[in-house]
Amino acid sequence: MQWETQRTWAHISLSALEHNYRALRAGLDEGCRFLGVVKTNAYGHGALPVARRLQELGCEMLAVATLDEGVELRRADITAPILIFGATPACFASQVVEYGLTQTVFTPELAQALSEAAVASGTTAHIHIKLDTGMSRVGILAHDPQAAAREAAALCVLPGLEAEGIFTHFANADADEAYTMLQFTRFMDTVGLLEEKYGIKFAIRHCAASAATINYPCTHLDMVRPGIALYGHYPDASCQGLVEDGLMPVMRLHTRVCAVHELPAGTPVSYGCTAVVQRNSRLAVLPIGYADGLARSLSNRFCVDFDGQSAPIVGRVCMDMCMVDVTDLPQVQPGSVATVFGTDQPLEQAAQLLDTISYELLCRISPRVPRVYPD
Image 1: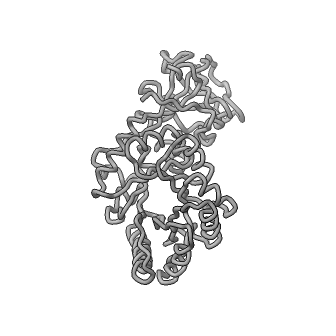
Image 2: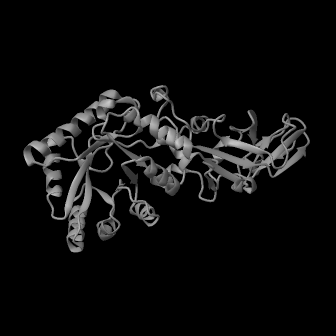
Image 3: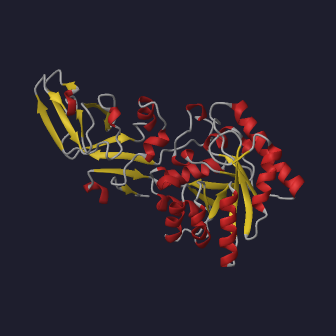
């Protein structure tokens, strides 16, 4: 296999991706669409292979964060509808139209630019209106549904635009039901006013990312858009057990021992000499460091796994390497494979140590780490 010669690699199981897709889809009502979030290189898993598999599975829509991400998929012959979540500068409106991408819209400037580009090319630009119901990030502010509906209606009626969708983003769907329902109410009130007062009806209303997809079926509406759950990780520990068939991590991160050293007791290890071995020790050198995505702040705090046996990191994680204590693991030799995270080494352990979330650690895996797709 190709990865047998790699220093460090990420094993991506598209079979696990398919399992998660089907498990999440099983919890939806008939007719509810599924949007697969493939932004940020599919959360580090590889946007093109993931998008291809999701398209094969019948995923109705994909989502990216930027125009460039959408163009990359189109140039790779991904034909499924692609929604750009982020704010695209108005000067790039013609590219959005050229590549047949669906753009999130919440400003008159971008709506007008898309309208002009669509009319000039004799086509239609598909848009989704974004409402800010409480995330305080981007979108038409919808604390006052009357004002929000008025502002959104003005964008929807421009020539050349088809406002097929409208959505919002929950800020705390994994921890605060009251706030989530407040946001949902603001959203539904605004959508209701757009239909009743302005005669604008959207084919696709969507609110539910991973946490709401799992926790709040009432928010599924016309489409859900799981991100982290699609890749086998729960958005919060409180969500575990709520997906009937469970979720399977899609990525496993491996590295291969490049050297083993015998060191006498009292020897300092790595930059800054922050660790000193307390006994005669065997240290394995792993060719993975913070340039690969192994956080330097895991120095002296984290363990890697050798076939179910832990080996602690000793000293500071370097840019391209780190050292682990294998004194009690005589079977570990140059060429032995260590798992940084995977089935027996949950990513959530590292996230907890770093006071962060699994999303960040997945996205942190460097492009120089090859992704391999055995299935």
